Length: 75
Image 1: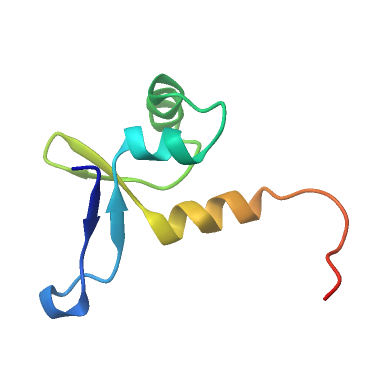
Image 2 (image 1 turned 90 degrees about the vertical axis):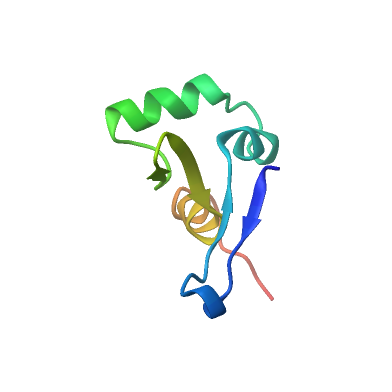
């Protein structure tokens, strides 16, 4: 399974996703690109749980928003 949801009941508040799930969400980003970014200490924040790499969904969204370019949005 690629999505792991954790609630405050177990002390965690993030929803974690795998690199494969990240690539489904970010066009043009491959699992190999994510691995290269981790090696170079760039890209979105991640965690290693043993040998498994996971990304917190809210932190991934923040990382994407931080890289936004262009004009202002009007409401």
